[in-house]
Length: 471
Image 1 (tube, helix red, strand yellow):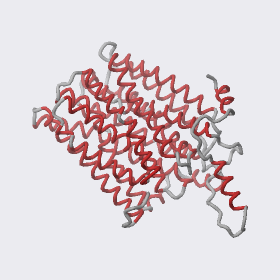
Image 2: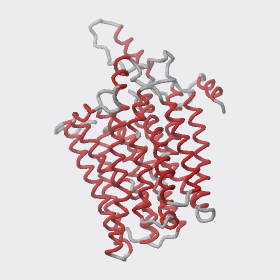
Image 3: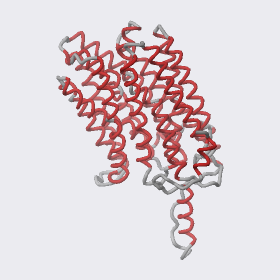
Image 4: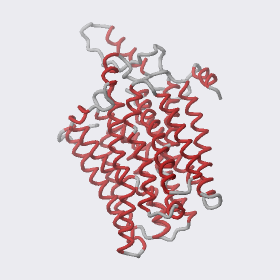
C-alpha cells in the first residue's frame, strides 16, 4: 500500500463516522453571520488552516487517529510492558529492583520531557520530521539494546534512546489529533481510540515475551519487538505523508513569531487552574507506573504465581486499558466533562491501589489487575484532554501540553525507583508474602489520592462552588 494509493483513496466517499471538519465549521459560522439581520451575533469562528485552502476531510481526520494509535502502540505499548523486563534484568544485570526501574523511568521521563520541544516543533510545522526522527531513534535503541550485556549500555539504549525517540513522536501525534477534532463532538472519543494503541501494544509485547524471553533470551526478544516496531513505523510515515502539510493553528502571523521566541510559555503558570492541574498530575504520575513495573514481581514473589501466569496478569492489566480509555472519553464528551470525569476516575483508581495489599490469592490478582488497568487507562488518556478543557487559548495548546508533559516526566522519573526502594524496605522488615510489598502499595495509592484532591481544588478554582457544571 503506497502513499499514492492512500492519497487516491482519500478522494473517495467517506466511510468513517462523519465529524464536522474545520472547513465545514468555518462555512457554517460565516454563512450564519452573513444571512438575515446584520446585527445578528455571529458564532465564534474556529481556527482555520493557513497553509492550504484544501478542506480537511473526515478520512484525513480519522487517518490521523490511526497515526496516533500506532505511535501509542510503539511508545506507551513498550512502556506499559516494562514489567516483562524487570525480573530478567534484575537477574542478567545483577541489579536491585530500584536500579532496574531507572531504565524504565528514564524511558518515560524522556517521552514526557521532550514534549516541550516536540510540542514547540509541531507549532512551527515540523510534524513529519519529528515522527521520522523519533522512529529512527527507537529502532536503533532496540537493536543495540539487544546486544547489551551490561547495565549502562542497557540504560542508554533501552532507556534514553527509546525515551527520546518516543518523546519526539508522542506529543505531536496527540496534539495533531486534538487539532483535527477541535470543536467536534468526537474529540474525546478520537483521543480515546488513539490512546488504545498503548493498551494493544501492552498486550502484544508481553505476549511476544511470554513465548520468547525464556527460550530465546532477552536480546532476541528485543529484536523481535524491534521488527514489529519497524513495520509500524514505516506505516506511520506513509500515513503521515498523505495528510495536510502543516495543519496547526499556530502557523500564521504574529502567533507563530511569538512562539518562535520560546518553547515555554511562563505566563501559563499565572493561571491558577493550569498550575494546580500540573501539580496534581505530578503526584498522580509518581504512582501511576509503579504497578506496571512491579505487578509481575509481586505476583511471583508474594503469591507464587508461575511465570506464564504473571505474563497473563500483565496482559490483562493492559487489555483493561482499552475500555478504560474509551468509557471515560464517552462520559466526558457526552455527559459530565473532562475534569469531572478525571476526578471520578482518579478517586476510584486510588481506592483500587489502596486495596492492593488485601489481594491474597491468585484468583484475586486477576480482577485486581483488570480493575487497575481500567482506571490507569483513563488516568493516562485524560491528561492532555484535561489541559485542552481548561485552556482558553487554543493556539497555545501544543506548548501548554508540552510543558505539562515535562513536569509529568519528572514525576515518572522518580516513581519507579522510589517503588523499588520501598520494596527493599518492605523485604527487610517482613518476609511474609504481600506484607513485604506493603510500603510500596500504600505509597502508590496515597500519592495518587493526593493528586486527586489537588485536582478537585483546580476544578473549584475554575467553576467556583457550583457542583452541577460540565467542565
